[in-house]
Image 1 (tube, each protein chain N blue to C red):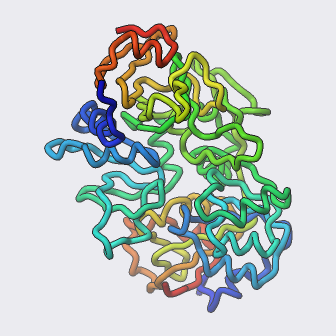
Image 2 (image 1 turned 30 degrees about the vertical axis):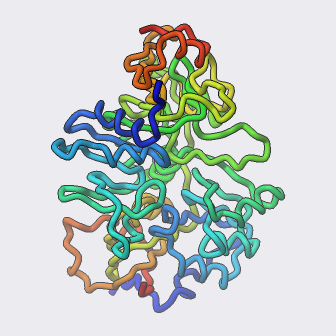
Image 3 (image 1 turned 45 degrees about the horizontal axis):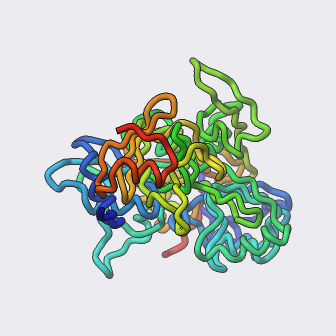
Length: 221
Length: 212
């Protein structure tokens, strides 16, 4: 019998190595798998590269991970927030490397990574600072930038319901990067509100099929 | 002459959105446009974080923090609305499926170049979000801004001095003085002198040879 459900968050993050690249779901707080991030702080992996839309809020979740000194580099689209002071201080003091990526390019780079696509050309960013060092190719008379895929060691995502095969549904806009990140990591860990019996999820409504998920842990919200 | 308030700019812009349009209102000032969309027309609001058919803010006490907009404020979903993941959301933008996006700006050039993401200051923390994707992807990019900076400089310029968000992407600029249309070859046409400033005053304020 296949059972991807693990008993707790410690088991969910077990074995994550120093130097890992970790995709973290969430758009601000919505969909951010706080319990997995807290467990990773406890687990101790360091020298991490984090991929997320933002760079943490206040001193919880990603901000707490950064404050604990575990993050070497962050790849994101919008680090500056009203309460991103942990990131701001680390960035300004040169303790954290930032790779700034337009939001849609970020999502598509991860999608490409998960889909086995070796990169893509996009019009986003042409003629801007963020085009520096990137190949420009003219396709049908328009300029495009080449963007490389992102693949990761680990993905942390938050979903609403999951079953023991790793099938997932999401809640409203907390879906955001979750289904994309799930595809692009060697180890995808889903924090879910509710575990359901196999067959309970409507197959027409499953958003992330279990093939993309290795561990499921229930964390009641 | 009577300059428009920010709400009046939003109201003026909302008049130019047709029924059936798929529209993204970015973050900040442009989100005011939602308050003035005609109630008798069906217009689809898109938010980059994976929602179509976005409704107004919920009543106090009914906020759902899993249902937010691009500015991370709680919103509601209208009947017929839908959710989707980030790669699909940005496919809607880059794929040319959005009819209009409305963005704020630091500067817009007479060729339609847009600068709205970075002040260029050395110690500024850069944050681009979805601005470049919207600028490159929406079929029409409308800018909503006050025409002048606090110290009286025109934000409609010959050439942007701030870092660019996108090249030749803006089609219309809605300001407190007038509505400007970007045409070919750097021609900027005043399509509505909504403040009554007059052609000479608008030319003086912008330093541009405007068409009327």
